[in-house]
Length: 402
Ligand SMILES: [Zn+2]
Image 1: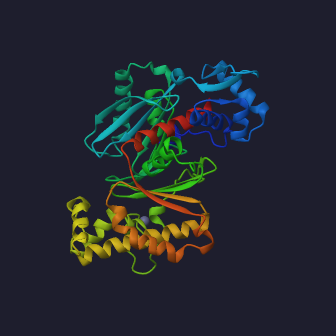
Image 2: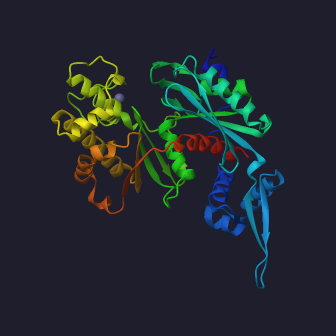
Image 3: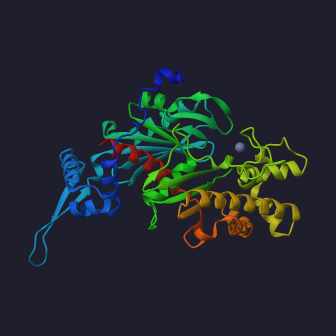
Protein backbone atom coordinates (compact mmCIF):
# COMPACT_ATOMS: atom_id res chain seq x y z
CA UNK A 1 0.00 0.00 0.00
CA UNK A 2 2.69 2.49 0.94
CA UNK A 3 5.24 3.49 -1.63
CA UNK A 4 8.85 3.97 -0.62
CA UNK A 5 9.79 7.20 1.14
CA UNK A 6 12.26 8.04 -1.62
CA UNK A 7 9.58 8.07 -4.31
CA UNK A 8 7.18 10.12 -2.23
CA UNK A 9 9.48 12.46 -0.39
CA UNK A 10 9.20 15.28 -2.90
CA UNK A 11 5.41 15.51 -2.66
CA UNK A 12 3.69 17.64 -0.05
CA UNK A 13 6.78 18.13 2.06
CA UNK A 14 6.89 21.21 4.28
CA UNK A 15 8.94 23.97 2.73
CA UNK A 16 11.85 24.45 5.07
CA UNK A 17 13.18 27.91 5.76
CA UNK A 18 10.21 29.63 4.13
CA UNK A 19 9.42 33.23 5.09
CA UNK A 20 6.83 33.26 7.86
CA UNK A 21 5.67 36.86 7.28
CA UNK A 22 2.26 35.88 5.87
CA UNK A 23 1.74 33.38 8.68
CA UNK A 24 2.48 36.05 11.29
CA UNK A 25 0.13 38.59 9.70
CA UNK A 26 -2.75 36.12 9.34
CA UNK A 27 -2.33 34.82 12.91
CA UNK A 28 -2.40 38.32 14.38
CA UNK A 29 -5.51 39.33 12.42
CA UNK A 30 -7.24 36.08 13.39
CA UNK A 31 -6.39 36.46 17.06
CA UNK A 32 -7.57 40.09 17.20
CA UNK A 33 -10.56 39.68 14.88
CA UNK A 34 -9.69 42.90 13.03
CA UNK A 35 -6.52 45.02 12.83
CA UNK A 36 -5.43 48.11 10.95
CA UNK A 37 -2.14 48.14 9.06
CA UNK A 38 -0.60 50.34 11.78
CA UNK A 39 -1.73 47.91 14.48
CA UNK A 40 -0.32 45.03 12.45
CA UNK A 41 3.07 46.75 12.28
CA UNK A 42 3.03 47.24 16.07
CA UNK A 43 1.90 43.65 16.75
CA UNK A 44 4.32 41.91 14.38
CA UNK A 45 7.30 44.28 14.50
CA UNK A 46 7.41 44.09 10.71
CA UNK A 47 8.10 47.09 8.45
CA UNK A 48 5.00 48.93 7.20
CA UNK A 49 6.13 48.48 3.58
CA UNK A 50 6.24 44.69 3.95
CA UNK A 51 2.83 44.66 5.60
CA UNK A 52 1.30 46.81 2.86
CA UNK A 53 2.69 44.49 0.19
CA UNK A 54 1.54 41.24 1.83
CA UNK A 55 -1.87 42.58 2.89
CA UNK A 56 -2.45 43.95 -0.61
CA UNK A 57 -1.78 40.51 -2.07
CA UNK A 58 -4.15 38.81 0.40
CA UNK A 59 -6.92 41.34 -0.36
CA UNK A 60 -6.54 40.76 -4.11
CA UNK A 61 -6.71 36.98 -3.50
CA UNK A 62 -10.01 37.45 -1.68
CA UNK A 63 -8.66 36.18 1.66
CA UNK A 64 -8.78 39.49 3.59
CA UNK A 65 -11.35 42.26 3.43
CA UNK A 66 -11.05 45.92 4.40
CA UNK A 67 -13.66 47.25 6.78
CA UNK A 68 -14.02 51.02 6.86
CA UNK A 69 -15.54 52.68 9.94
CA UNK A 70 -16.10 56.42 10.22
CA UNK A 71 -15.06 58.22 13.41
CA UNK A 72 -17.85 59.82 15.46
CA UNK A 73 -16.15 63.23 15.36
CA UNK A 74 -13.52 64.60 13.05
CA UNK A 75 -10.65 62.45 11.92
CA UNK A 76 -9.75 59.93 9.26
CA UNK A 77 -11.82 56.79 8.65
CA UNK A 78 -10.36 53.68 10.24
CA UNK A 79 -9.54 50.83 7.83
CA UNK A 80 -9.31 47.47 9.56
CA UNK A 81 -8.52 44.10 8.01
CA UNK A 82 -10.54 40.96 8.59
CA UNK A 83 -10.22 37.38 7.40
CA UNK A 84 -12.92 36.30 4.92
CA UNK A 85 -13.93 33.12 6.71
CA UNK A 86 -15.31 31.20 3.75
CA UNK A 87 -12.47 32.09 1.39
CA UNK A 88 -10.77 28.74 2.02
CA UNK A 89 -11.07 25.68 4.24
CA UNK A 90 -8.87 23.04 5.82
CA UNK A 91 -9.59 19.53 7.05
CA UNK A 92 -8.36 18.11 10.36
CA UNK A 93 -8.15 14.40 11.16
CA UNK A 94 -7.57 13.12 14.67
CA UNK A 95 -8.03 9.78 16.45
CA UNK A 96 -10.96 9.67 18.87
CA UNK A 97 -9.93 6.60 20.85
CA UNK A 98 -8.40 3.56 19.13
CA UNK A 99 -11.34 2.70 16.92
CA UNK A 100 -12.49 6.01 15.47
CA UNK A 101 -11.13 8.90 13.44
CA UNK A 102 -12.72 12.33 13.73
CA UNK A 103 -12.68 14.33 10.47
CA UNK A 104 -13.44 18.04 10.79
CA UNK A 105 -13.84 20.81 8.20
CA UNK A 106 -12.62 24.22 9.42
CA UNK A 107 -12.88 27.63 7.77
CA UNK A 108 -10.05 30.11 7.23
CA UNK A 109 -10.73 31.72 10.61
CA UNK A 110 -10.61 28.44 12.58
CA UNK A 111 -14.36 27.84 12.98
CA UNK A 112 -15.44 24.20 12.84
CA UNK A 113 -18.21 23.83 10.26
CA UNK A 114 -18.55 20.07 10.02
CA UNK A 115 -17.50 17.04 12.05
CA UNK A 116 -17.88 13.32 11.35
CA UNK A 117 -16.69 10.12 12.99
CA UNK A 118 -15.24 7.25 10.99
CA UNK A 119 -14.86 3.74 12.45
CA UNK A 120 -11.52 2.02 11.73
CA UNK A 121 -11.38 -1.03 14.01
CA UNK A 122 -7.97 -0.22 15.49
CA UNK A 123 -5.01 2.06 14.71
CA UNK A 124 -2.37 0.23 12.69
CA UNK A 125 0.46 1.60 10.59
CA UNK A 126 -0.34 -0.77 7.69
CA UNK A 127 -3.91 0.44 7.31
CA UNK A 128 -3.82 3.98 8.67
CA UNK A 129 -3.29 5.79 5.35
CA UNK A 130 -6.22 4.02 3.64
CA UNK A 131 -8.50 4.75 6.61
CA UNK A 132 -7.40 8.39 6.69
CA UNK A 133 -8.13 8.83 2.97
CA UNK A 134 -11.58 7.26 3.35
CA UNK A 135 -12.42 9.36 6.44
CA UNK A 136 -11.38 12.61 4.75
CA UNK A 137 -13.18 11.78 1.48
CA UNK A 138 -16.35 10.93 3.39
CA UNK A 139 -16.21 14.18 5.40
CA UNK A 140 -15.71 16.29 2.27
CA UNK A 141 -18.69 14.69 0.51
CA UNK A 142 -20.97 14.93 3.56
CA UNK A 143 -20.02 18.53 4.31
CA UNK A 144 -21.08 19.71 0.86
CA UNK A 145 -18.03 22.00 0.67
CA UNK A 146 -16.36 22.13 -2.73
CA UNK A 147 -13.17 20.06 -2.67
CA UNK A 148 -11.10 22.69 -4.51
CA UNK A 149 -11.73 25.15 -1.67
CA UNK A 150 -10.13 22.78 0.89
CA UNK A 151 -6.49 23.81 0.79
CA UNK A 152 -4.69 21.74 3.44
CA UNK A 153 -5.15 18.71 5.69
CA UNK A 154 -3.70 18.37 9.21
CA UNK A 155 -3.49 14.82 10.56
CA UNK A 156 -2.78 13.88 14.16
CA UNK A 157 -1.24 10.60 15.22
CA UNK A 158 -0.60 9.20 18.70
CA UNK A 159 2.98 8.10 17.96
CA UNK A 160 6.37 9.46 16.94
CA UNK A 161 6.61 11.22 13.59
CA UNK A 162 8.97 13.08 11.29
CA UNK A 163 6.82 16.15 10.69
CA UNK A 164 8.97 17.55 7.89
CA UNK A 165 8.70 14.41 5.75
CA UNK A 166 5.21 13.27 6.83
CA UNK A 167 6.61 9.96 8.10
CA UNK A 168 5.33 7.79 10.97
CA UNK A 169 8.19 6.26 12.96
CA UNK A 170 6.26 4.57 15.75
CA UNK A 171 2.61 3.92 16.51
CA UNK A 172 1.14 2.29 19.63
CA UNK A 173 0.21 -1.35 18.84
CA UNK A 174 2.48 -1.27 15.76
CA UNK A 175 5.67 -0.59 17.75
CA UNK A 176 8.89 0.26 15.92
CA UNK A 177 8.53 -0.36 12.19
CA UNK A 178 10.14 0.83 8.95
CA UNK A 179 9.41 4.55 8.44
CA UNK A 180 6.02 4.90 6.74
CA UNK A 181 5.52 7.94 4.51
CA UNK A 182 1.80 8.25 5.16
CA UNK A 183 1.64 12.06 4.78
CA UNK A 184 2.74 12.18 1.12
CA UNK A 185 0.72 9.03 0.36
CA UNK A 186 -2.52 10.50 1.75
CA UNK A 187 -1.78 13.84 0.08
CA UNK A 188 -1.47 12.19 -3.33
CA UNK A 189 -4.64 10.17 -2.81
CA UNK A 190 -6.87 13.11 -1.82
CA UNK A 191 -5.17 15.78 -3.94
CA UNK A 192 -4.73 18.10 -0.94
CA UNK A 193 -1.37 18.88 0.76
CA UNK A 194 -1.04 17.03 4.07
CA UNK A 195 0.93 17.71 7.25
CA UNK A 196 1.07 15.14 10.05
CA UNK A 197 2.09 15.60 13.66
CA UNK A 198 1.71 13.85 16.99
CA UNK A 199 -0.92 14.42 19.65
CA UNK A 200 1.30 16.02 22.29
CA UNK A 201 2.23 18.72 19.81
CA UNK A 202 -1.31 19.49 18.75
CA UNK A 203 -2.40 20.00 22.36
CA UNK A 204 0.18 22.81 22.47
CA UNK A 205 -1.06 24.14 19.12
CA UNK A 206 -4.65 24.17 20.39
CA UNK A 207 -3.49 26.27 23.34
CA UNK A 208 -1.48 28.65 21.15
CA UNK A 209 -4.25 29.17 18.55
CA UNK A 210 -7.42 28.85 20.65
CA UNK A 211 -6.37 29.46 24.27
CA UNK A 212 -7.34 32.55 26.17
CA UNK A 213 -4.13 33.16 28.14
CA UNK A 214 -1.88 36.16 27.61
CA UNK A 215 1.27 34.05 27.38
CA UNK A 216 0.36 32.07 24.29
CA UNK A 217 3.54 32.81 22.36
CA UNK A 218 6.05 31.43 24.87
CA UNK A 219 5.39 28.26 26.82
CA UNK A 220 6.23 24.61 27.21
CA UNK A 221 3.39 22.09 27.08
CA UNK A 222 3.67 18.64 28.62
CA UNK A 223 0.83 16.33 27.57
CA UNK A 224 0.10 13.32 29.79
CA UNK A 225 -2.09 11.34 27.39
CA UNK A 226 -4.26 8.26 27.99
CA UNK A 227 -1.16 6.04 28.06
CA UNK A 228 1.93 7.93 26.91
CA UNK A 229 3.26 11.45 27.13
CA UNK A 230 4.95 14.09 25.02
CA UNK A 231 6.05 17.69 24.99
CA UNK A 232 6.15 20.78 22.83
CA UNK A 233 7.65 24.22 23.18
CA UNK A 234 6.50 27.52 21.71
CA UNK A 235 9.10 30.27 21.48
CA UNK A 236 8.19 33.68 20.13
CA UNK A 237 5.05 32.24 18.54
CA UNK A 238 6.83 29.36 16.80
CA UNK A 239 6.58 25.69 17.67
CA UNK A 240 10.08 24.35 18.01
CA UNK A 241 10.87 21.31 15.86
CA UNK A 242 14.16 19.44 15.60
CA UNK A 243 16.31 19.49 12.45
CA UNK A 244 15.13 15.95 11.62
CA UNK A 245 11.46 16.81 12.02
CA UNK A 246 11.31 15.32 15.51
CA UNK A 247 9.22 16.89 18.26
CA UNK A 248 10.14 16.94 21.92
CA UNK A 249 10.25 13.32 23.09
CA UNK A 250 10.42 14.26 26.75
CA UNK A 251 9.09 10.80 27.63
CA UNK A 252 12.63 9.53 26.99
CA UNK A 253 14.48 12.07 29.12
CA UNK A 254 16.33 10.04 31.74
CA UNK A 255 15.30 10.36 35.38
CA UNK A 256 17.11 7.27 36.75
CA UNK A 257 20.65 6.10 36.00
CA UNK A 258 20.99 2.77 37.77
CA UNK A 259 18.38 0.02 37.71
CA UNK A 260 15.92 2.33 36.05
CA UNK A 261 12.61 0.97 34.84
CA UNK A 262 12.74 -0.44 31.28
CA UNK A 263 11.08 1.67 28.57
CA UNK A 264 9.43 0.56 25.34
CA UNK A 265 12.10 2.53 23.44
CA UNK A 266 14.66 -0.09 24.50
CA UNK A 267 16.47 2.08 27.07
CA UNK A 268 15.80 2.35 30.80
CA UNK A 269 15.20 5.13 33.30
CA UNK A 270 12.99 7.13 30.89
CA UNK A 271 10.55 9.68 32.33
CA UNK A 272 7.63 8.01 30.54
CA UNK A 273 8.28 4.75 32.40
CA UNK A 274 7.66 6.63 35.67
CA UNK A 275 5.25 9.50 35.00
CA UNK A 276 2.98 8.38 32.13
CA UNK A 277 -0.20 6.46 32.89
CA UNK A 278 1.17 3.56 30.81
CA UNK A 279 4.43 3.59 32.78
CA UNK A 280 2.63 3.69 36.13
CA UNK A 281 0.35 0.77 35.19
CA UNK A 282 3.24 -1.24 33.71
CA UNK A 283 5.15 -0.90 37.01
CA UNK A 284 2.01 -1.86 38.96
CA UNK A 285 1.77 -5.05 36.87
CA UNK A 286 5.49 -5.79 37.37
CA UNK A 287 5.10 -5.43 41.14
CA UNK A 288 2.26 -7.93 41.03
CA UNK A 289 4.36 -10.44 39.08
CA UNK A 290 2.50 -9.73 35.82
CA UNK A 291 5.29 -8.09 33.86
CA UNK A 292 4.07 -9.42 30.49
CA UNK A 293 0.36 -8.68 31.00
CA UNK A 294 -1.20 -6.06 28.68
CA UNK A 295 -1.48 -2.59 30.22
CA UNK A 296 -5.19 -2.59 29.44
CA UNK A 297 -5.70 -5.42 31.93
CA UNK A 298 -5.46 -2.94 34.83
CA UNK A 299 -7.71 0.06 35.32
CA UNK A 300 -6.10 3.39 36.21
CA UNK A 301 -9.10 4.50 38.27
CA UNK A 302 -8.72 1.35 40.42
CA UNK A 303 -5.17 2.43 41.25
CA UNK A 304 -6.45 5.88 42.20
CA UNK A 305 -9.01 4.27 44.53
CA UNK A 306 -6.28 2.13 46.11
CA UNK A 307 -4.11 5.21 46.74
CA UNK A 308 -7.05 7.06 48.28
CA UNK A 309 -7.63 4.10 50.63
CA UNK A 310 -4.01 4.39 51.81
CA UNK A 311 -2.54 1.44 49.89
CA UNK A 312 1.26 1.72 50.17
CA UNK A 313 2.05 0.31 46.70
CA UNK A 314 -0.33 2.71 44.95
CA UNK A 315 0.90 5.70 46.95
CA UNK A 316 4.52 4.83 46.11
CA UNK A 317 3.74 4.61 42.38
CA UNK A 318 2.18 8.08 42.34
CA UNK A 319 4.99 9.48 44.47
CA UNK A 320 7.56 8.14 41.98
CA UNK A 321 5.55 9.64 39.12
CA UNK A 322 5.41 13.06 40.77
CA UNK A 323 9.11 13.03 41.71
CA UNK A 324 10.14 11.98 38.19
CA UNK A 325 7.95 14.56 36.43
CA UNK A 326 8.99 17.34 38.84
CA UNK A 327 12.68 16.52 38.38
CA UNK A 328 12.43 16.45 34.58
CA UNK A 329 10.46 19.70 34.39
CA UNK A 330 12.80 21.49 36.80
CA UNK A 331 15.71 20.35 34.61
CA UNK A 332 13.92 21.65 31.51
CA UNK A 333 13.23 25.01 33.21
CA UNK A 334 16.88 25.29 34.27
CA UNK A 335 18.06 24.51 30.74
CA UNK A 336 15.52 26.42 28.64
CA UNK A 337 13.87 29.12 30.84
CA UNK A 338 10.45 28.71 29.14
CA UNK A 339 8.64 31.15 31.47
CA UNK A 340 5.45 29.08 31.50
CA UNK A 341 4.89 25.35 31.71
CA UNK A 342 1.44 23.94 31.04
CA UNK A 343 0.84 20.31 32.00
CA UNK A 344 -2.30 18.83 30.46
CA UNK A 345 -3.55 15.42 31.55
CA UNK A 346 -6.05 13.08 29.90
CA UNK A 347 -6.77 11.45 33.29
CA UNK A 348 -8.46 14.10 35.48
CA UNK A 349 -7.27 12.38 38.71
CA UNK A 350 -3.59 12.34 37.77
CA UNK A 351 -2.77 15.88 38.91
CA UNK A 352 -4.21 15.38 42.41
CA UNK A 353 -2.36 12.08 42.75
CA UNK A 354 1.09 13.35 41.80
CA UNK A 355 0.91 17.02 42.83
CA UNK A 356 2.57 16.87 46.31
CA UNK A 357 5.62 14.92 45.11
CA UNK A 358 5.75 16.94 41.87
CA UNK A 359 5.93 20.31 43.62
CA UNK A 360 8.40 18.94 46.17
CA UNK A 361 10.77 17.83 43.36
CA UNK A 362 10.37 21.08 41.41
CA UNK A 363 11.18 23.02 44.59
CA UNK A 364 14.32 20.98 45.17
CA UNK A 365 15.67 21.11 41.62
CA UNK A 366 14.62 24.40 39.98
CA UNK A 367 17.19 27.19 40.13
CA UNK A 368 16.09 29.70 42.76
CA UNK A 369 16.72 32.54 40.30
CA UNK A 370 13.89 31.18 38.09
CA UNK A 371 11.32 30.33 40.76
CA UNK A 372 9.53 33.71 40.76
CA UNK A 373 9.77 34.02 36.98
CA UNK A 374 8.29 30.65 36.04
CA UNK A 375 4.59 29.79 36.10
CA UNK A 376 3.55 26.13 36.18
CA UNK A 377 -0.08 25.07 35.79
CA UNK A 378 -2.10 21.89 35.28
CA UNK A 379 -5.34 21.35 33.39
CA UNK A 380 -7.30 18.41 32.01
CA UNK A 381 -7.32 17.79 28.26
CA UNK A 382 -10.60 18.85 26.65
CA UNK A 383 -12.34 17.00 23.80
CA UNK A 384 -11.90 20.08 21.66
CA UNK A 385 -8.11 20.10 22.03
CA UNK A 386 -7.67 17.54 19.26
CA UNK A 387 -9.82 19.04 16.50
CA UNK A 388 -8.47 22.50 17.42
CA UNK A 389 -4.93 21.14 17.27
CA UNK A 390 -5.55 19.48 13.88
CA UNK A 391 -7.14 22.69 12.59
CA UNK A 392 -4.16 24.73 13.82
CA UNK A 393 -1.71 22.31 12.19
CA UNK A 394 -3.45 22.74 8.82
CA UNK A 395 -4.03 26.51 9.13
CA UNK A 396 -0.39 27.04 10.12
CA UNK A 397 0.73 25.49 6.82
CA UNK A 398 -1.97 27.18 4.76
CA UNK A 399 -1.30 30.67 6.20
CA UNK A 400 2.40 30.21 5.54
CA UNK A 401 1.80 29.34 1.89
CA UNK A 402 -0.77 32.03 1.01
ZN1 LIG B 1 12.36 5.54 26.54
